[in-house]
Length: 271
Length: 271
Image 1 (cartoon, rainbow over the protein chains, first blue to last red):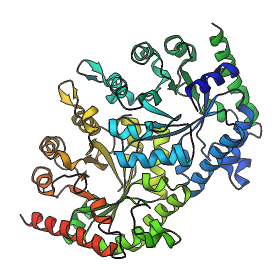
Image 2 (image 1 turned 120 degrees about the horizontal axis):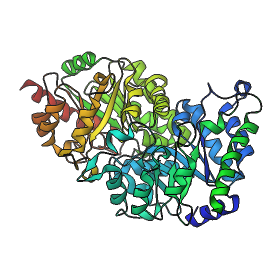
Image 3 (image 1 turned 180 degrees about the horizontal axis):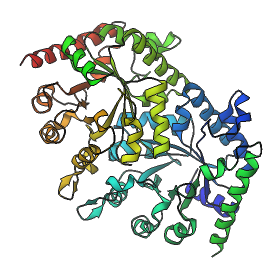
Image 4 (image 1 turned 135 degrees about the vertical axis):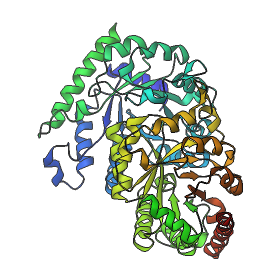
């Protein structure tokens, strides 16, 4: 998917919502556990109930790997379902991968080619040759961790490197890499004041923003400091939407939560 | 496995060799491709031919994920084979994971509990709460990226944070985390002069050292600067051993390459 197509979808749906498909068998409605593939059935129901309100789904691979072979199969079925039934959706493999060049190539192939996600998240610690193999895929996107939404973000990301915080050095450096036009960045919503700084470095890039909802970030603040002319934001919410109810009404309740966010986004887009 | 058991194995085998099981179907002997699970058959043959010469095997998960469900199955079969037939071996899931706390817990469960690896590699960028969930497992080990063997290591890892290189800050900070006694560190062999600095910070920790062999690092230099009284080193070699031959003699040739390294290690241990 091209960035232009993503922006078109945002304008049409009046939404820049990404729904995180982080499926924990201990948290999903218990009646689903009787089915052959509870994880996929859960995802399918959530997708069917919310796809007109969001522009992106983001399965976090940890939740699938935790169930071994069966989990990997559920992930495959989920991405296949999205690609076949809702090809307008921007899909994100939230994998946070990164390794030496020839190894990163294998990860890139796994997520962007075989599973055919539109994008994958990567970690920057190993530098240029760990990220460039992902950037080589045309019309695919690599979403690099910059400033994350967790407490540990302050351990290293905000530490000063030659007078500049590490996350800024990471973003600036990545702009010099080959095919850097395919980069987006993860920036946590819990740190809205940082968006002004980040927009000085990457005014046009899309930012994937976790931390709205369960982690306590504010949507309006993020938009105030982080939005650009092409919107430039994908706001992720996982637990607040997908676990809105543990009953048989879980998909309907998920829709209600997604709708609240979509309506808030619609009103922000009108400003 | 406890660290004491690992050290005992090193003393018995007179080896601190780790063999990287990074299986690429384009590089393995072509006669294996006719078998039902070429990746596992390749690994099994390599393990059978080399297990008395090394103390550890390290499958890099990228090479398995690249083959989807079948790859994941090969990884499961490989770790099961190691745990059942060669339980003295220290197993490493080279996964380089790291995510927010509840998500890292899922990865930790996947690799340390379900697949039952002795250890897993993690990336430090997201800080304390992204690593501590791995450290919570008793008699398991978390091997954190510190200074990697690739060119991109110089993009961020060696940059100065308040007068000290980032990789040093990363190691020092990690020592304050809960259950930090379960930490080991990845330090690339291509940068032998850095080992002196690292040993000042973590004199007793085990270091996993990639970069000997295909990437050009020197074993004797690494040992000179990095070895401690309990050896404290696991030297990884992947391609130079497992791809020593593309013929039907591949396992024998792998053994010959492993033996060269083991003999070199034996002579270093005698010094």
